[in-house]
Figure 1 (tube, rainbow, N blue to C red):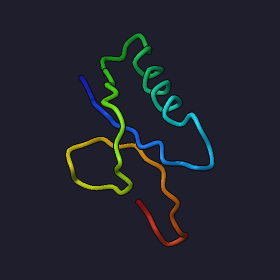
Figure 2 (cartoon, rainbow, N blue to C red):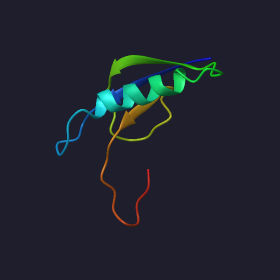
Figure 3 (tube, rainbow, N blue to C red):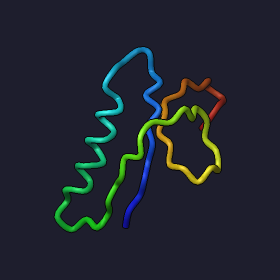
Figure 4 (spheres, one colour):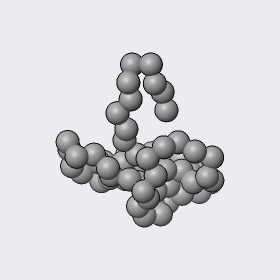
Length: 68
């Protein structure tokens, strides 16, 4: 099974989040009985969850009564 994803490393208060995400997906792939394959498809400018047929990973500050 192959799953593509994109990353918006849009945090100003830290760095390396894109590498951390890519490494975490690779860790899942390295499990000996795993049949999943994550494919990094590049960057995205997405900052909100939406039904756009894309697996976008991004960071967002939300208030106490908000959710993503």
